[in-house]
Length: 467
Image 1 (cartoon, one colour):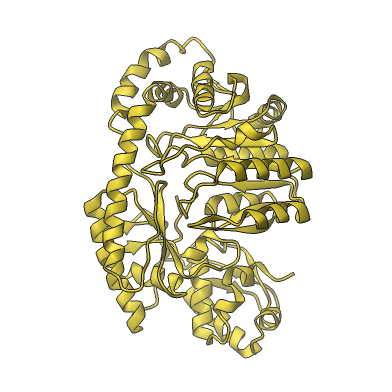
Image 2 (cartoon, helix red, strand yellow):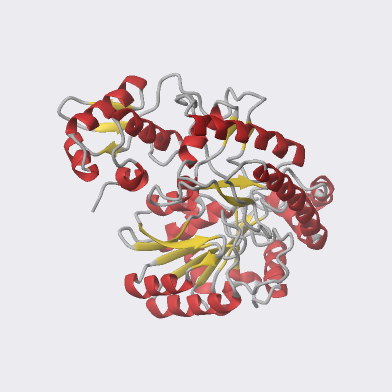
């Protein structure tokens, strides 16, 4: 079994690379968050063997990283990931002129303020309670359950837990049912922080491919049958980052296969409501079987600052989740829950507003991509982003060059388990059109830098989250 470093690098990406290029690739992994501070790297001898390079090349690469402060080395001991002492945490000294494309999220819905005002009497009525809400307010759980029922999945309030966002929900699920050392099936590409959560809970990741045209469902089903993973994490609606939607017939087949092999399906519906012009509405995977655990969130349809999410699961799973939850939190903030109750009564207006915003953002990205020779933007019927083909394996190089143009964007491999998809770039369609137009202008300039070989080393690239 190869090292995690080579898995993240992708041996094909550094084949024949000079020491300086290899050092730059490792630096990008550190600054992009794919290698974590303190993580132990392979020894020079082991890495040389894995990459089929001379040991002197590896020694030189590690020395360059040590000189810049990106690794620490003990004589005769280990090499570990570090950050330079003058490295600024994201956002602390951010330049106002920088445009951050690592965040695919919109500002708040116009109805948020009014919903907040309307929620205050409901919050005031709760002052006589303890203030702790382990499963969530009954009225909010019923509103979430009603939304599932409207979409075709019979659901009761007892099958809902309110959480502090969708990622919080994923971590609660893995805490309750996780098994260290087991396999987890994941899409390739997928949401990076879900991959990190699965890694943190000790899972071995098994990828299955997704592209703008959709899933290779034969591969997915065969992988379920051959590896029998303990969990599978899927984003079936407006997949992040490709924007694809899984057809109903494939949903049913995947749920059935998963149930037969004993796999818990964790279905992330954070992007489900982000429709622009898909033209059809799929049935939730939760309608197809009891082995589906669904997570959702208000963050993309209302505001990222509202940390409200939920879990839908059969009652026996809900009981396990509630038994574990007090070990790391005692519920979800009441004010946000009260606001969410108000917002969920206005879902048609909310989704209509989101659709208009996304349509304008998509048009701005399309116009920018059209001006860059060799790039291709696929049809993007909804979701957070466009999964753009840049015509060559230069995504990481472009991401580094973009920093010189005050543009922050994650490279394609940030969304994978093995340093692949260097031809791809996730471009958010969530920014206002004028901001997007400026971002695309800077991106075109960075692309010229890369193509002409004039991009400099981006030593100040920040370790940024991808949202």
